[in-house]
Structures are given as structure tokens and as C-alpha cells.
Length: 396
Image 1 (cartoon, rainbow, N blue to C red):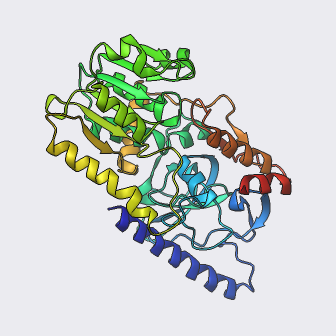
Image 2 (tube, rainbow, N blue to C red; image 1 turned 60 degrees about the vertical axis):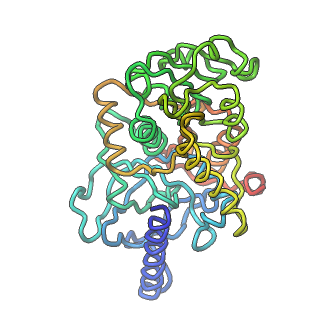
Image 3 (cartoon, helix red, strand yellow; image 1 turned 180 degrees about the horizontal axis):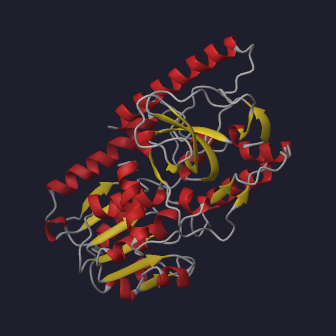
């Protein structure tokens, strides 16, 4: 499914490139996607500049969206840094990063039936998050939902990816049910704050988490909070006193999986024990050569297979692969409307749409010290301020 999504996105990128070439030939080289002027964008993450070529006119099934806010995800950084260029590589450079946006529809492509010009929408990405840090971007209709009037664009962009990603893990992969004991490793980031709310809403009887933000975690539903900078969670008596039904790993990776299995912290698969990870090996992913791909994929699938075959002795292991799309985003928005879920923004949010602002947003993401979602506010379209030093720092 991921390969199919990647092929579809690459095909759409190729179509956009062909349309750009045709338009540039038709208007003397001043391509603006039918807007009559260039747009402001953060090419390659920095610097933020005016006069960048606007997207081509929307293709079949696409929306041209004027971006008001764009949130950042680890996937954005992995593409921008080049660490995963084997799988996530832009077709051309410089490129505009970002894919989780909120804004207004400026134009619709052929076959679009759910949206019209002027609608406010939330959009996300499947394999490649490209084009979000710009005045205008293209979003496929299948990856967009109407923005509720009660949400600001800042809040809406923060809900585009992490929240539905967490929802798919809780409701579809782990199938958390009433009475489950749940451990969430990494409870204060975009994924973690979403998981806390979702498992509590699903009826979990006891929720433990690791984070330095104890008050926030308890507010979102945690019954026990372990400050991982002061204690190892596996040495806390309240954690090890009774085995967990489900563990969500949003922070640690293989080493923690092995430790938890050896210590018997989680029930066996035959008893209903599930381990769902967002971090298969470690938070940092390197995939730059062909041999990195099997080294990344094979252990995940092998672990998933043998833990099911030997479920009498070990919890069932799953990697959260499913990508957010319109349906999962709509499920999250329904929970928001019903009062069961709320947006958690990092205190530093929103960042301004300047070179320093975009660099600052990525710096906070890479630091792994964000407590909530990180968002850049594109609605304040001040004059761009080039900052070569910041751009060089980001490239490093």
C-alpha cells in the first residue's frame, strides 16, 4: 500500500512538473500557476522568500489552497535533512517542505466534488509532505476535510496528521477497549498528547506515561506519570506491579521493546497483550542507501510475524504504518466536536512565517522537547527577511 501511495504521489509530481513547463513556455517563463505573481515560500526550509513560483493549476482531484497555517512533523524533517532520501526524496531542488496545512480553497481541479472555491479546509499528505510552507499549495481531495468554524487555522493544521495517526493506532491497530491498562512512552509530543486523550476516551482503566510534563499528562488522562529524566519507567513499582494490555511506543524503539518483553511488563499475545510502535528502531532514521531499506523493514515484519506465531509467550508487535487520510481526520474532528478531544499546541507555537520562524520550528522539533504540536502561522504575511546563517544551520 505504501509503494502504491508513493507511486501515485510521484505520478502527481511528474504531472505538476509537466504543467509547470507548459505554463512557463506560455507566459514567457513567469510561472505563477494562474495567480499572476509569485508566492512567498520557504524553499528547502529556509530562507523564506517572495517571488517563488506558485504551484501549477490543480490537477484532477486536487485543490489549490491558500495556506493560513502549517504544522511540522518528524517526516518533514527526515525529508528535509536527507536522512531518508532513499524513500523520501523530492523530485527537484529546491523544494518547499511541509504538508499538514489549514487554509482556503482558491481553485479546484477536474472531478472535485466535495469542495468549492472559498471553503476552509484541512489537508495532509500520504508519502511526501511537500509545499505546505508557502502561500499556495496543492492538496489532494482524498487527503482533505472541511475545517470546523470553531477551530482556528493554527489549531486545525495541528490536527492534520498526528491526531488521526494516533487514532488509527488506538482504534484500528491496538483496538483499545474498556478496562485496558495502557502505557504510553513519550506522552507530551504531538502523538503522545493525542494517544493520552484517545485511550482514555476508549475506556482504559489505567494509563501510565513517560514525560516531564506531569500536569499536562494528568490533565489529558494519565493516572501515573514517570519523569524519564529522573526515573527509569521499568523501575517504578506502580508500573511493574501489574502487566499492561497495551504499550504505545512514541519515543524509544527496539531497546525498550526488548527490555519490556524480557521483564514481562506486557501481557502475552494470547492474553491480549499488544505492543504498537511509532519508533521501530530509534527516533532518528537513516535510509540513504539500498541496503538501509531491508535493514529497516525486515526486522519490523519479522518481529510482527514471530510474535503472532509465538503469542503464548510474547506480546504481539505492530508497527503503525497506516497513514492519515480524509476519513481518519473526520473521525478526529467528530471527537473534537463532541468534546472528547482537544488540540494541544506547544507553548512556543505559533512560529512566524519568516526564515527565523521556520528554522525555529524545525529546531524545536529536532530537539524532541516540544510539548504539543508545532505550527507556523502563515496568515501574517510580513516582508521576508533572508538569513543565510540560519539557512546554513538548518542544512547542517
